[in-house]
Amino acid sequence: MTDSAESDSLGLAALLERWSKGEKEAYDQLLTHLYGDIHAIAVRQLHREHYLTIRPTALVHEVYLRLSGLRQMQWQDRAHFLSMAARVTRQALVDEARRRRSEKRDGGRAVTLSDTNLGASEAAYDALDVENLLSKLQQFDAMAADIVSLRVFGGLSIEEAAEVLKLSTATVNRRWVTGKTWLARQLTREA
Image (tube, rainbow, N blue to C red; front, side, top):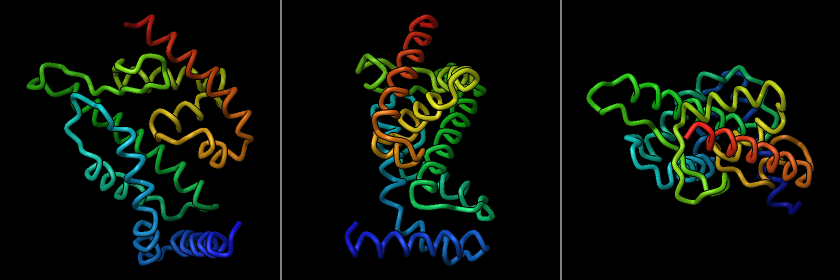
């Protein structure tokens, strides 16, 4: 690790600790520092979405608001924070899908997810269906479900997911293949 990267890491750790203790200024500084990372998660997630009314910047703001309520959490590091940001992004998208489904004026259009990693580059999947399937996958393969969630909802790379989960990239890659294969098979059955 370079001196600059080490210094940056120590600075983030200090901000996370200060925020955990309730310092709002630390959270604002943290978000300013990691805004690009969180925005990248939102952009990757919303890429090629056809029916979503939420834009990346609005999604980032929603994630910001939701994360602000987690200040009492004991944050470990940047990876832990980005993992939680990915989970909060997932929940925000699922909530948007539920809201869209409940509205009659939209013709019942589903909030869709598209992900080239799941098999077909042009396939669109209903966010609520993916969420329900991930809950099922969680019951019998929690690690694969976590990896799929980080990759599909968080847009994290294999390397980033490995960092978040503190696993080797080889392990994450194996579990990713298992999880995405299972998920793609289930989505194909439901189509």
